[in-house]
Amino acid sequence: MRFEYRWAEGHYDRLPVLATELIDRHHAAVIVPIGGAPATVAAKAVTSIVPIVFNMTADPVELGLVASLNRPGGNVTGIAMMGVELEAKRLELLRELMPGSTLIAMLVNPSNAQAETQSREVQKAARAIGQQVLILSASTEQEIETAFAAFLRERAGALLVGADTFFTSQPAMFVVLTARHAIPAIYPWRSHVDAGGLMSYGANLLDAYRQTGVYAGRVLKGENPADLPILQSIKFELVINLKTARAIGLTIPPTLLARADEVIE
Figure 1: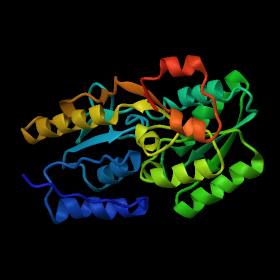
Figure 2 (figure 1 turned 90 degrees about the horizontal axis):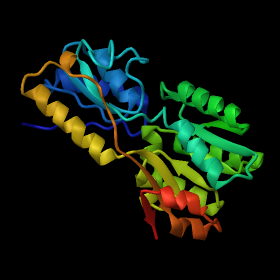
Figure 3 (figure 1 turned 90 degrees about the vertical axis):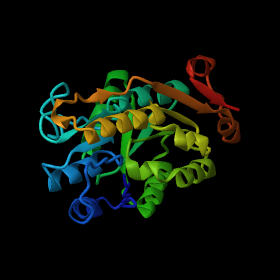
């Protein structure tokens, strides 16, 4: 068995070419897009025959990738990590962390097909609890810096970083910018917190990747992706970095600490 890896380095427009290369040049037996919705959509657009086993946070039914969660049909199946569905929960956690913040900002990547859904769900949740939300957009490193400048200009009290593969690939940049300006931020994945970010809430990535590998193995052994139901993550974790909290002069509420699955001292 041979593994071929391709990475678009955050440039989602490159994904169709990379997927085509894997199929035409390397005759891939199965494609495993773990770069979220953009990678899966790109792979599906170039083949309706080669099996695709995805790992992403978007709703595959909403994106038109599968007919249903129980009976996907076609050549696509995989693991749905509920990234978008958890955005409202992350907003609640930020509000609990910063109850006095009249304005909370959310950063989304407009190149991601789920950006509009992310924004809509968070704004809906914000209205329900009387929270004002500022939506910021970025799809490049320079635009991330511009978004942080807007955050400071609008005097937002905290930042919700939306689930997006490009953002996930930039933990150091987010850690530096939030530390420089003492910004409380919550992320979808613990990788940012391990790198020095403040707080994360989302699916356990290692467990989700393991499930993806199991499904890819079943497809390679001859099972039809059309018959393999979409699996949803069942393991979620709240991780808090106390060292970072102290560095930006923030006290974590005891009730929040008590619910954390892991506290980094």
